Length: 569
Image 1 (spheres, one colour):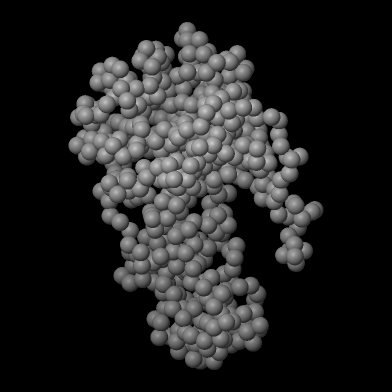
Image 2 (tube, rainbow, N blue to C red):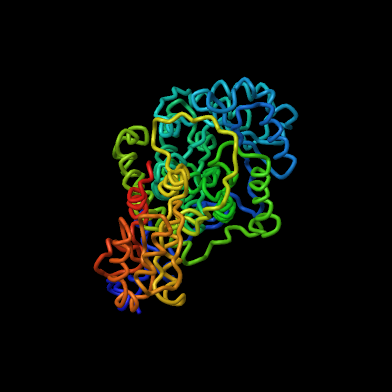
């Protein structure tokens, strides 16, 4: 079977293997020989099996960024009354005003509900405002200082006094620093790249804190890490396990033996979210939440399914927080410590991902550290990864359900209030679906929906598979498709094409019938005014311009079709 498929490989195992964007090989089968060194026990170095030593649910952390204080207060109270256990507040010019904190937190028991601040350059101001409201703040909160992460996201420098913030946080039982690795993920980076950037950033902050007189143990206790969780459950599980292993290695080199387990906050990926068919985002975030919890993240944020559309509504927030409840209370995901532990696949993947991330971390260090590497090294590396990922998305090797696969042309997109435009200027922020969604937008702007004619040749049994494939491909760009029915006469097919009113056709049938009819039907379509004739499948036939098939560049096919149909950008 492998020989017939044309796969070139030295062995069946090699032919069935795949490689991640980090260069990690995913084998088709694992056995005990793939197990790496002993990962240790939960709660003990190197913390692969968890920073905590016992079972239990994760911290359900909900993000709030609505600029209206009254709306945010109502959402905060609803969340805390219905399962949310900590708050993540985005403050600043593009979100909540720092001065609105007293109104937003009015009625919140701040000695029970931890608060994580995300105020960018206004972190010191926000920290002071929060601590005036919460002199007995609940442990587990974070002041959210992250100048390197801010520069990665916005391009702007933030001269924050990290040692002063660390002392302020330490005096109040809080953390001061969040190493936010999501900007690297949001720029199209792979998992090991996200990990390597985060470890380099964490080390940079350790140096600043210890140079200012904090002990290494105190410095480690001031840092929390934020990572993206995606719908690729195994890579996400391995990423959180690998992150703890990497940070434990840093602690070992620094001579820290107590409190060295990495504090982790998982947030479901922004890059994977879609604006089209946003209901599918509920499935994506459920997978991501499961993977983050199974991977041992201490806190998890599920983004509302309508996050790409604007400010989330109450229903979307309810679904987001109930995702946690379902996984923890009904599915019992948190009843077992490190449920993936011992899996030959997951243990090998964890070790390989950690090794790849460590190499990238060392490369960043050789370039002068995280901040210096943001000038050229990190953007270039992430851009190269995004280029490879984009190619896979365009060829539908990395399918996006509801967008590049199984699109719903008749589905209505919910309308949401527009979110304030965040400050940009640093690393780009990409969405995996952006290429296809831009074409959907282009189709929607047309006076009427553009159409492609599917010239179905022969009986239904002969043409259905390829007609369905072609319809799925063209509809992924927002193009409607019409068929001529089970015909073989070229002139009848041409007449149906003329009646469709379009200028582009695609032949759909079996290889056998193509040999008998493709050239004649393509010629008839040309005479009927077809500007371009595609063929679903492979092979060359007179009158056929090009083919559409599994693995073809779907975005290129769609863009060409839009141009042929005269649909303006």
